[in-house]
Length: 421
Image (cartoon, rainbow, N blue to C red; front, side, top):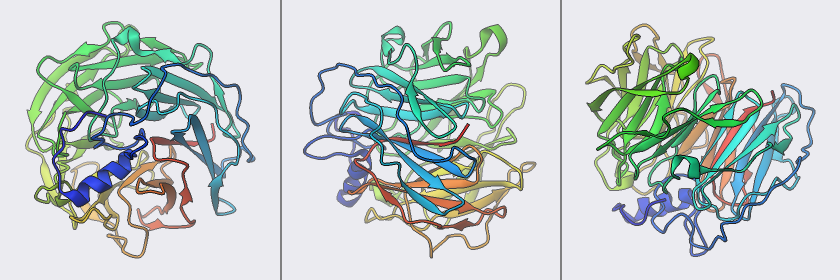
């Protein structure tokens, strides 16, 4: 992550550094705000490989797996058994990666492939996930990022590596180089650089990425040094023989730091990211932008919905079987997490209404969450040492329940969740 550009209140800086894993020894691959470089330690730039990593578990749909970067040089695995109501480390040493590699992101594609992007060594590690959650290094990995000119470290970001909903395209933003790299993901997990990638955006530094819920359009927020977004760019995404080719639709001045597309594909939900936790004035709003269904253009300004706390991160349920739900995570001025908030979205009008029981004051407060592919489980993360990972069960009404105690992680770092394929 970028060298010191970030000026925030002391308490907030301590929280951000904890999320990012900053220490006198080194920094993790987790969330934004690393002010000491991607690692405080050293890396010899070498890569290591590993065969199959066998995990316990039945491989049934009652198991959901979480994978997290361990700065010692492994990908650690955790299993949530939804039937037994247990969440714990698998107890198996994970496959090897470059230690202190400087993370950019980790994502799951097609429910069966896991990709870990490391900045210091400029590599993408790719693994297959079997029905029991086992990880096996894919043939031809790690993949060098030299084919796209490499990628820089990031500041204040956690969504610079994403896939489309179908898991057939991988996007990586590069703020310093003003470009976005795109790969096609094959049915066997291979990565192929899309023709024309990386796609240059002169004068715009793309940071956080998101797609509309149907995977037709890509959105990128402008790079920021203070967790407060002010602009975004929209792209149409090619299909067929032009799959993954990006074409700029428009650039927008708007309070967009982080955003999520709703499952209907009609709206983009965004936050400015501005909060007292970063030494700024709280912006207690979610912003809803209409998406032009033909071009992908955004209607700006969007409509505002008032929140109880200034959103620092958001998560959108990927499915819409009983409504559309968005969750807001926040920090207070002292750098502590506020209770999670939940809102139901009307997929026709974009209107938001608070879910009953929100904010969830009796549940664990947390600053960062992401869904499994089914949308039934909302995993949450703490970067304050010792780092930990927990999970909420999501009711059909959007309400949350906390079924298990969070599990400790070996180090701070990027993480991803996968239902068994």
